[in-house]
Image (cartoon, rainbow, N blue to C red):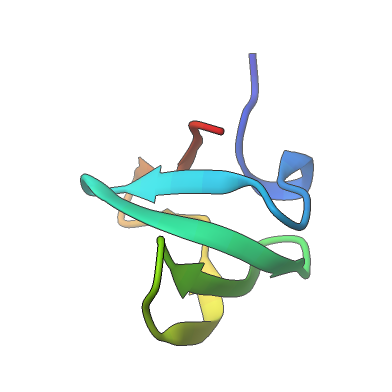
Length: 58
């Protein structure tokens, strides 16, 4: 089951290297996220970096 990349929707909570982010915008291979729950907004956030993929957790 693929649960990264194009599957991410606005409002999804994802995890990358044990850190959580809320998806704000999905642009395909990357997007804009906010550190979850109350953190900085990060643009051009890639869903797959050095072979480590973000996973949807909520």
